[in-house]
Structures are given as structure tokens and as C-alpha cells.
Image 1: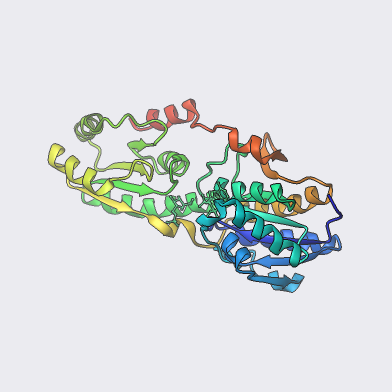
Image 2 (image 1 turned 135 degrees about the vertical axis):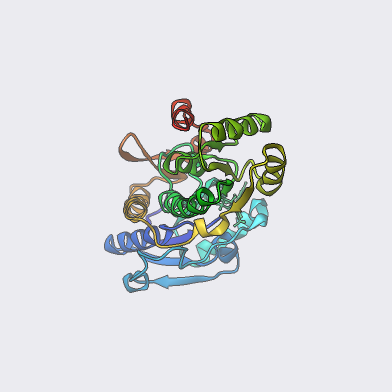
Length: 323
Ligand code: ADP
Ligand code: F6P
């Protein structure tokens, strides 16, 4: 591996609040260490289209508090092709980019891995609201997203209680149930449906609603993870079976936007810096993680093979608290 003189930074996959803090940190750490920085717009798509800009410290001023990503992001399916990966590596060489910090989820890491196989140094930074990356207990954007969802659910709960309704609220997370579990506990939901745990037994939920009514509960809040889906049709079936007015709310993209929390700004800032610093130490094909109170890094291959699951005890607590 040659000396690193210039790094590129890109954001890829779904945007997440705190990505800007990571961009700012990676850029300023690199500049502070004497490197040149190039911003690559629109993820791998922008790399292929050579949407590459020079970045100075001032280009990342006043962004730490902003949601989204100033570089833009995209999904670029053709990046799975070897010839396209070779072309991307060639573009990096033409622009003098020795290494790239890739801020995104596990799909984006596969792209980073492909680039490192073509001789470009890469380090991934976990940027996704889904918290679904196994090698790390923290991903950029989750804290903001879960707080946004929690506040929205509080509001729905107010109206649900006033009307003595059942509310099904669908939160994001792709195939992972972390946002749903956290909201389930933080909002005091009566039921939490997670792709990792739910047995698809709607009758149990119906019985639970009828029981709760008998106990004098004025509302019944069901947090439904995106990976379960079908919230609207589920609401219709539940209303028909229980006689309790039931409404579905799908929170959607509001969970991806907004100003990042202090936690997202802080962790994203450390991770962005860490990514640059390990690259300067000669590491490549790595992904940054946070485990057991420490920032650390893993081989991308190893990271992609790790499995993550919902903790049984935490899920049990969510259920215990609904009495
Ligand atoms: P995330 O990074 O949030 O998981 P995606 O799964 O959509 O989001 O992946 C983001 C981008 O990463 C894709 O649009 C594609 O450009 C790239 N990517 C995903 N999987 C691969 C792969 N197997 N090989 C190369 N690039 C990939
Ligand atoms: O990965 C973040 C996420 O918001 C998921 O929770 C969701 O399933 C997905 O992205 C939506 O992707 P898109 O922006 O392509 O609709």
C-alpha cells in the first residue's frame, strides 16, 4: 500500500442524521493530518459519474447540526458488477484518491470491500438509522431516529387515549426491529411486533386488546416494525375482531430527517476521525464499530458475517411492562 495523500469521502444507502457530523470530522481530521480531501457526491453513483469536489475545512462549516448528508446519497445497483468496480477504482486513481471513507450501511460496505479488492484503501463508518450492523452497538442516526419516532408516537398516543382507540404505529428498520423495540419500551406500548420475534399470531394481539379493555385501559398501542408491515390491513382486521376503533399510522421518512441528537453528533465525529486515523496507520477494508465502551474496527468480511439479534431479556421487559 502506498502512502495516503488524498482521501475521498462518500455517503451511501439511506441517509441518516449525523452523517454530516461524520463527513465534517473525516474531512477536518484528514486536513489536520496534512491530507487532501475530495468529497464524492451521490455515493457510488457519483463516483462513477466523477462527481468529485475538493473539500477544505470551510466546506464542512455549519453542517454538524444538519440532518441528511451534504454529499447526497444514492443506491447504485450496477456497483455489484466487477467491471463497474474496476472502472470506479480507475476513476479514484485518475483523481489521485488513495483511500475512501464510506459512510453507510452493510450494503455500502460491500461496495467498499469491492473497491479495496481493486487496490483502493477503504474504511466504512456505520451510518444507518436501522442499528442493524452486527459489529457495532451504535450506528449513526439511530439515536435521532428513535427519538423522532418516540415523540411522534407520544402525540398519537394522546389522541388514541382520548378516543379510546387502538393505534398501530409502523416504524422503520428494514428487516431489523431495533427502532420498534426501543419505541415499544420508551412509549409504553402494549404490543411490539418485531421481525426477529413476532410469531404472526394476530389472535394473540386481539385477545390482548380485549383483556386490556377489561382491565380498564383506554388505549392500546401497537408498535409494528417495518419488517412486519401491513399495518393498515392489520388495523382493519383488528377493529373487525375486537370492535375497538383501530387506526394505523406509518411514520415513514420523517424518522430519517431532522437535526441529529448530541449522541449522533458525538459518536459520528469520533468515528469519522477514527476512520481517517486507521487508514493512515495502513489499515484498509475495515469498518469502524463501537463495542463495550470502545471505538474499534473490524475487517469488512468478518463484519459482514457477524449476526445480530434482539436481546431476549430486553424483549421480555417490553412485554412485562404492558400489564
Ligand atoms: P446500506 O448501505 O444502507 O445497507 P444498500 O444496501 O442500498 O444500503 O447499499 C448501498 C449501495 O452499496 C448500493 O446501492 C450499491 O451501490 C452498494 N452495494 C450494495 N451491495 C453491494 C455489493 N454486493 N457489491 C457492491 N456494491 C454493493
Ligand atoms: O436503511 C434505512 C431505511 O430507512 C430503512 O429503515 C428502510 O427500510 C429503507 O431505508 C427505505 O429505503 P428507501 O429510502 O430506498 O425507501
